[in-house]
Amino acid sequence: MTDTSPKIQILKTGSLCPPMLLRVLSACALALTLLAGPVAAQDLNRGEIEKIVREYLLENPEVIAEALTELDRREKEAAEVARVEALNESADVLFNSSRQVVLGNPEGSVTLVEFFDYNCGYCKRAHGDMVKLIDENPDLKVVLKEFPVLGQGSVEAAQVAVAVNSVAPEKYGEFHEKLLLSRGQANRASALAAATSVGISEDDLLASMKTDEAGQTIEEVYSLANRLGLTGTPSYVVGNDVVMGAVGYEELSQKLDALQNCGQTTC
Image (cartoon, rainbow, N blue to C red):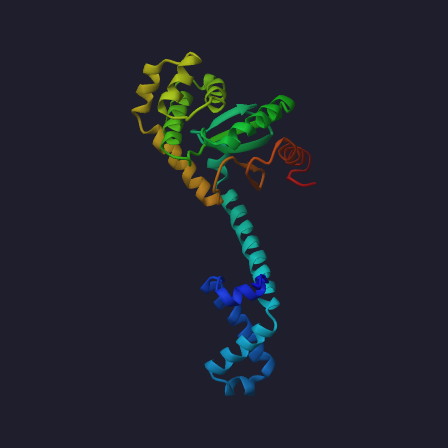
């Protein structure tokens, strides 16, 4: 029978990545040498220390799991601190960029930022959440960030969307819903079709697309997403919270209510 114990498998298969294993071993070695006392530690060479550490870990494999759990906790904590710093440093471009789209109340006191991709199925399902939040909260400002991460078609659709926002910003919401909820692949052709169907001149769009506005807009969002550690769509920013994934209306609503009432996403 194969031993399926995760702790034993780590030692047998070497599935623990070398840098992480080195950190665990180093911590164990330090602890053991400190316990042994300064004189004993000086008398031990590297090989003897490694032997002691190995024997200790074989007898107490749970130490590795405990160390990795603590390491994971510290890394998540550090990532969260870095994310909050990035939010503070990027606040102006995040909330007030001249290239972003604003729906809802442009002067609203509470803001929801959404990073989306027109080919993202989760974004399609989450669209109703955004509409409901806007309908229920007249003080809500929604900022949309074009974040095309699902291939060339997504980039093309985003380029047309940027042109729509330049040529006819008052029609962007209608265009956005039309393209996002349409079936099939979003790309240049489908995006242009969605735009013209809501009454926007294709000639005006094509003229706008000859400028570098789309490239600069998308690059701005890519840079911002990288600083915030975003890896997919939809992703949201509410206050100092970065929310990844289609978490649903209830969670977003609770965070927005708390932000509006308490100045932070938890009261």
